[in-house]
Amino acid sequence: MTSQNNWQNLKDLLALWEEKLIFLEREKAIIDSPIEQFELVKRIEECHIKINDIKKRLNEGERSFELIKRIEECQKEIKRINSQLESLKLEIDSQPSMTKTGEKQQGLFQEIKSKMNILHLSDIHFGTLDQAQLWYGQLIEDLQQNLEINQLDGLILSGDIANKSTPEEYESAQHFLDELLKDFPLKSEQIIIVPGNHDLNWQLSRQAYSLKYKDECHSNELQEGFYIPISDDVVSILNPQKYPQRFSNFKTFYDRYKGNIKEYQLNPEEQYSLDIFGDNILILGLNSAWQLDHHYKSRASINDNTLTNALNEIRRNDTYKKRSLKIAVWHHPINSPFEDRIKDSNFLERLAVNDFKLFLHGHIHRAENDQFRYDLNIDGRKLHRICAGTFGASTKELNTGIPWQYNLLKIENRTITVYTRKKESENGAWEGDFRWRYGRNQVLDYYTIEEP
Image: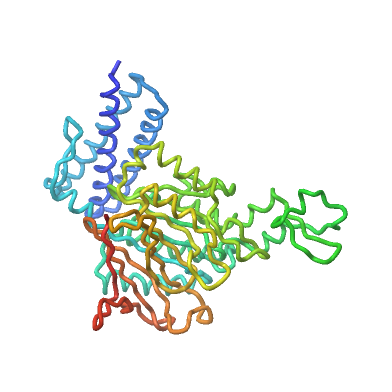
C-alpha cells in the first residue's frame, strides 16, 4: 500500500490540479465557439467535483487502490482538457505545467494569480426589475469603461440584498447577478453572500409569534428575548420552529448561487460559509442579523457558537488553514452612534488570534476604514476594517453628503488597494469618490493596505 508520505504527496498534487483547473477555467474565455466553451466548462466543473470527492475521502482516512485509480483518471482528464485548449491554439505555453513531483513552476502563472479584482457591494436594497436593469448597466459601464476591469476574481455582497426580503425583490437581485455573471463568469466559491437586517422577512417573523395570556405561559416561554410584551396580561410568544423561517426567502436566493457547495442553513449555529479566492485567500461569511426580527431590531451580533464551528473547520482543514490572507464578512458595524451596531465586539480578538487580516461589512451607508489592533507592537496582529457604502438605498436613506457607493478591491502581491466609487444621481454614472486624505493637499479615490 502507498506510504503515508506518498498519500500526502497526492494531497499536494490535488491542490496543484485545482490551481490548474482555475487557470483553464479562465483561459476558456478565449474560445470563440459558445458550444466548445460550454462543453469545456462542463468538463472542468466535473473535474472539480471529482477532486472534492477525492479530497473528502482522503481526509476521512480512506486509503484504497480504487481511490488511486480515481486520482489517475482525474489527472488524465485534466491533461485532456489542457490538450483541447492547445489544439484550439491558445497561447498557454508560458503557463504552469503539471510536473511529476507535483511542484509548481514559477513565473507568469503566479504573477497572474497574485493580481485579483474583488467587487464589494453592500446595502443594495433591490426592489424592481427596472431598477436592477438600470443599476447593472451603470455598474458594468463603470467597471469596463472607467476602471478597465475585464476580469473579476470575486464578488462580495455584504448584506441587505433585498429591502423587505420578498421573493419579488430577490428576483430583481437574481436578474442583476445573472447579468453580472454573463460578463464575469464567476464560480460559486467566488461569490460571497451574507444577510443583513433587510434580508429577513417581517411577515414571516410575525408569523413566528403567537398571542398568549401571561398566566398560561410556561416559565421557559418568558425568557428575555423570547417574547414580546403586548399588555399587562398578554404577550406574544416566539415559536422556535417557525422563527428561523424568516430567512427562507434569502435562503432561496443564496442557494441559487451557492447551494451546489453548501445550502444556506436556517440553524443559526451553521450560518457560515468558507470559500477560497485564487491561491491564498480564505473568505469567512457570517450572519450578524441572526437575532433580529420585526420587534428586536437592534440586537446585531456574531453568534459565538457559529464562529467556533467555523474556526474549528478552518483549523482541521489544511486547504483552509494554509491560506495566507483570511478575510471575514458580515453586515453590521462594530462602531456606530446607533443602537443597531454589534455591541459585543470581543469576537474580533478570536479572529485576530486565528490570523484574519481584514473584515468587510456595510449597513451604515457610508464607506469607512480603520483598524482593530489586538497587539500594540507595530507588526502585531490586527484587523483592517473595510466598510462599503450603500449601492442602492432609497434617497431618503442616504446620509447627508454621502452618495451611493461601492468598493473595488485590487490585490497585487501583498498590497490591497480599495477603490471607492460614487454615484451622485439615481440615473447618473459612477465615478471615483475622492474622500481618502493623504497629507494636507492630497485626496484620493482609493486607499491601500499592506498585507503583513
